[in-house]
Length: 122
Length: 122
DNA sequence: AACTCCCCTGACAGAAAGGTAAGTACCCTA
DNA sequence: TAGGGTACTTACCTTTCTGTCAGGGGAGTT
Image (cartoon, rainbow over all chains, first blue to last red; front, side, top):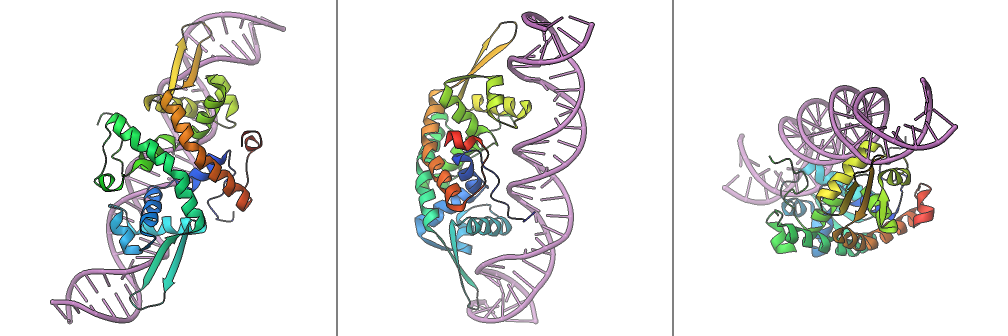
């Protein structure tokens, strides 16, 4: 009943890790934040082509709850909010690296479609 | 339009890998098949507590399509179907290992709930 | 004065994922 | 003859996820 959503009973470690990464944009957010150390909301939005503001905030909030992302609000007048990875976020990214390599292989192997981002990022 | 479902344009390798693992039971199926080399349908069903037959076949079919799982049908009279991992399935499992370790850490770190399976498997 | 930018929030709706229950067709055991 | 096991398939329903749209409140830009 506590609306805390992300802690179902897990069946294995992969389960517990996937719960935290699944979400259409979370992999990318992780990637962006890892690459740039610190990003503002609007920068992330521009980096994820097609994301809606709602989904972006939603995902960021969940990742914050999950201890992956740090959110720093500057009480300035055009509001400024900076996101960065926590230690856990960084280790998660490391753990994700082999999976990313496998996925890139799969894309190559099967000649799957990619969006322009991949060219710069892979 | 070709109903081939699992090959959306990907934004990065993680994306392409997650597409293939996301699905409530796929991690477990991978784990089971890696541990036992070969499993029959009913063995898998018993190994994944709570899975419905529908989901199990659905996931197995998708994983077959994705080249992770090999399906061998023996035209016998009590039907016999054996599932095993392909080479790609095995490498995916390897790539998943660090993620599984990270997830297991997370579970420990935050004292999250697990189902009985973890005790034996982690 | 009007517009845009910033970082959201909430209502609503459609899509996708997952679950339930039943049926199929054949065999073996009790 | 009844029940159980084998490996599914199909129709239907519920739950979860994602997207669309509108607004908010102040400050700089034209």
